[in-house]
Image 1 (cartoon, helix red, strand yellow):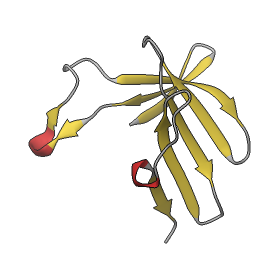
Image 2: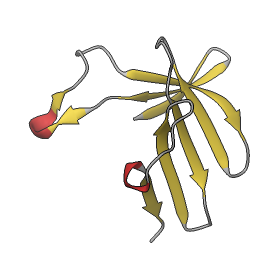
Image 3: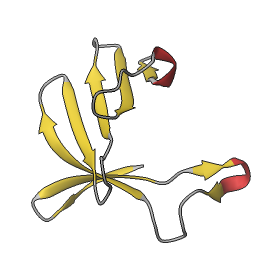
Length: 88
């Protein structure tokens, strides 16, 4: 995963891998999300070039906890689908 400037945008790119580092996407491909909203606690990215695109959300729940998840419009995100990062 990378976040980098591209023109006037910030772009988050994700490359998925199976075990043994076998990529989901083609060699030169990745999933691309553009930053569309930013606050002190939230960063919201929208996937590029997809019909009914998912959102990638990052939320700072506390000084110790960051939560991220993918969300489709009008769908509830299950707790089991959230990535929870805790500062050690």
